[in-house]
Amino acid sequence: MSRTLDMQTVSTTAMFMMEGFLGAESKLGRDTALYPQNTGMLETVSELAAYAEISEREIIAREPQDFPGVYDYEVSEGFGAWWYEQMHANGQPPTVAVGTAELVRRMNEFFAQGKPA
Image (tube, one colour):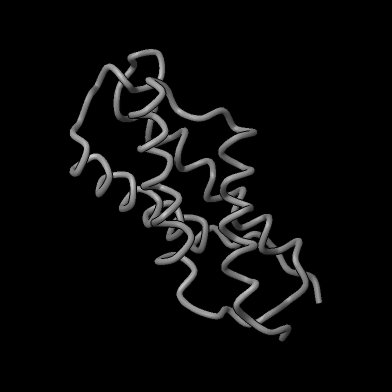
């Protein structure tokens, strides 16, 4: 069975990533100087949201399996918080390579809890 990219799922994942981002921002404080090239929230949200498509493509590429929990609570939201924490700690967002590696690490950890479908 061919699986395709579902934009509603991508959008939902992006929203949960942003929820995590805003939660971390609330705890650590908003510093607009941290936003990419000091350009603002729109560009920051766009950069973070790109990981939602990466997430969906990674899921599609995997063998079908049961979700052992709520993916967006456990992976997407946590990833968004991590992304802001990295931005806050390093003065800039993580590179796409570093962010993707962290996202895949979180996905692997999540799916390791489940069973093949």
